Amino acid sequence: MFTVCALYHFTRFEDPAALRPGLLQLCLDNTITGTLLLAKEGINGTVAGPRKGIDTLIAYIQTMPGCADFEWKESTASEKPFPRMKVKLKKEIVTLGQPDVDPTASVGNYVNPEDWNELIRSPDVVTIDTRNDYEVAIGTFEGAIDPKTETFRDFPAWWEENKDRFHNKRVAMFCTGGIRCEKSTNYLLGQGVEDVYHLKGGILKYLEEVPQDDSTWEGECFVFDGRVSVGHGLEEGPHLLCHACRRPILPEDQNKPEYEHGVSCHQCVNDTSERDKERFRERQKQMVLARERGEQHIVGLD
Image 1 (cartoon, helix red, strand yellow):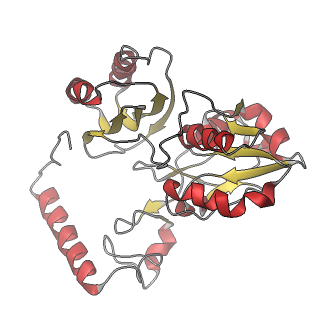
Image 2: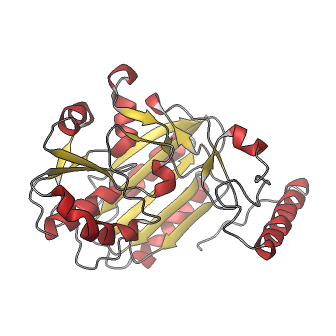
């Protein structure tokens, strides 16, 4: 059994590159895999490993500048969720593309999972899902608005086009673990929206703490690891991943004529050229050969 740890923390890192080697080495020493992102605005990522290794990583991150009180969420996976460990340097730990957004300055009102249902059922509240379209497609809260954004960077433009719909409404926002809402609520406050709320700990905390019989969640929650989706109690969901487009699919989708393992699924078959598909087929062939030779994925800083 693997312990999966999802974490983020907004703080000021003057030199993120200096933090990178030590963080990677600690993860390698403790057989932790996954991805951690470092930027001047903080740290973000999901990793998995043995219980002792995750505890060691948490203690290490708590010694990093401004991270003494960082929060994380844990779940379990029956199989190894990530093939290797990566520590990447980024301009943003979650990309909104708005240079004036600063979650360390102000964010919306946090709402605990046990209070979320009452808030979103209020007639003067509009609930907005800040995740990408393929995430929303497999599950969301009842009555939530889907902006149909392909990336988080698209959210500001969507808001500008739709903000008049929400005049005199309180705005409740949610995402997988909470990080996108830290930025999106700060953005809305900067746009003059006064009553902004967001789900503390995100969907993952809600699914962990709120009993299914009391839940307003419908479907599964997409996660960025080998489990692909989780449900109530953070139990592993039924979804698989199309390795061509990285979108979730159900097991029965593999029976559709558009599906070819590692090459296409019914969602992306028309998005790529035949030349792309040949490249994907070759990639898939090389992956199979590597597995047969017992080769491991290369571990590195990239």
